[in-house]
Image (cartoon, rainbow, N blue to C red; front, side):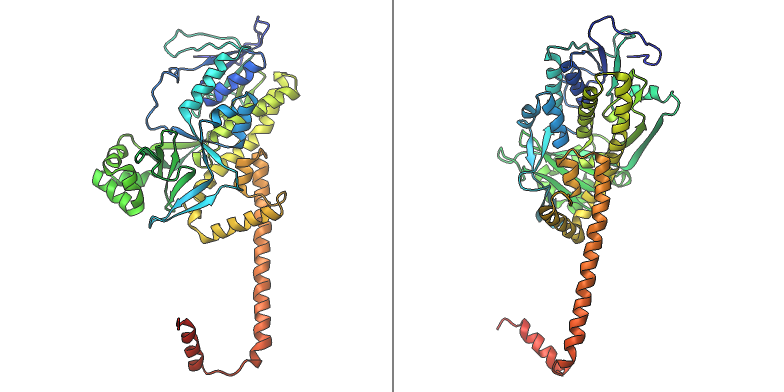
Length: 459
């Protein structure tokens, strides 16, 4: 559907303002709920078939992670409880070592968790909620339909990472845009239930970190797990036969072979090529008082912080809050939305890149685990001053760019504190050694060695 938002200044003849939401995905449908709740006439434009009749598209993740920000956005339209009831809580990362041992790393304090959510079900719920909102009307326009030029008071571009609306912005002066493909792709596998039950502990996000690549698994309501292998494309290209798939998994993920099944691995590895991941940044998010970008259309990000959907949902919530502050005056609301959201969305896009390194590599580091324990301890005794990065991102609505600033500050403070403690310990140990060494008995080396050997003996 082609829309000319740059030249049409006429208002709708209807008493209700008309909002055209382009893109019937998660953020688009949530936006429809928000605008309909405010009394706007809402028209949603989507080229794909109705998600409620569509089959799940293979090769696209059916799992999403819902955190505090997304929950708050759903709560505003009365959908939080409905969605949470259909999610699976994940309290920690479960790290799978190469030797098969598993060790949990909690996400936060006791009672804090993220939710594994089915993408298709969430979108169906949002679409139905938007359609049944009494104060709004929705019209779907299909790609095969006749070309139609619409008039609307506001066009909201929620049409994904390859947004057609954003493409129109590129024609405007002083519009900044960048996209970056990371050199890693992903493939998906399924771990079926065993005797009707989950094959692994369900209340965890399972991770197989292997430094330069990793595999993760999220639980589904049907007792399956969706596994996603993230790896450089050049590594995918080395695995060319079914036997090499098994050889690869025996080397790096041996405990996953009986869970997924050798034949399923051979089949699914070549079912589709590895899928690419892109990070998109742009600014501003608006054009005049006629058009605004939200969700992936404004800030597509790699999936490693589980914040893509949550940031998109928070876009809707922030826009709604600004509408309250500025009395729905689009000429003031849209530039304020750009001012507020651009630094936040770009900050979380950078954090998503960072978190991939943490998930695939840092979780194997003893220093990382030590620092995490130190951060958690300091958070307990100074909860308002020291807040772990993951806690700020996932369990609060602290603005993303402020999260990054606070993280860098507290990381510097904690590292300096640890360095100071280490220096004091070394100085104290040196003093005691110098102070008491002269008074120690002169024991021959051979005798000292014999005493040490005796200490090791159990008898």
